[in-house]
Amino acid sequence: MNAVARFPKETFEVSRTCQILILCEDFAAYERATEVCWRILVQLADDLDFGFKCWSFIELTDPACVRSVVKTADNADIILLSLHSADLPPVATEWLEAFAGHRLQAEGVLALVLNEPPGSPTAVAKLVARLEQTARQTGMDFLSLVQTPAESFFQPAGISTVAASARLFNRNDPARLRMNR
Image (cartoon, rainbow, N blue to C red; front, side, top):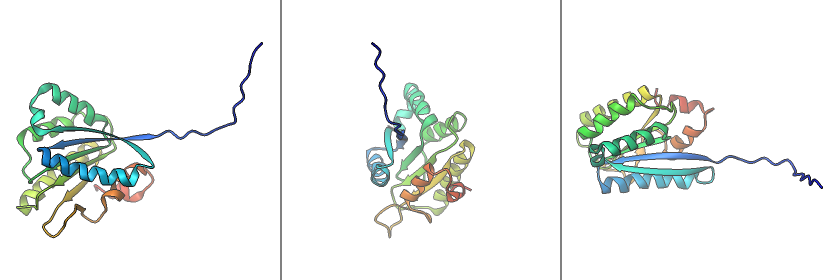
């Protein structure tokens, strides 16, 4: 006897996982990066699943770690650099140069979290220009989250963190196309 099972037509929604790579200077920078990630997660958790991976800049001196970071960065939706000052350590600069030539996925966000109030406006502008260039080379958007002395929370220039993150996943949003241009 053959049994035939009949199921009503159902539509299943495939959950999208947002992969976030955090590269940080130290544990304090990691904590600030996770605060930003938490704010994104709270706003978008109903729509997305999240995967987080984190490495410190010190770990980028280990070739095995560098291979893991590059592999993770190739497919990350958000790459978040968390620094205390506008001085990017040499090992992070080397990694950025290597990363720009190996990125597989063309979409995503390269984000900067600058944890201390910016010292030299020239140094901040230079760092932001460098990261914007890397984002352009990889087809990513760039988001700068710089804390100023008058702010008690991160404030991107002209756009909220949550709105910027949401635009990453809304391919039809015209503002998404202007974020890094």
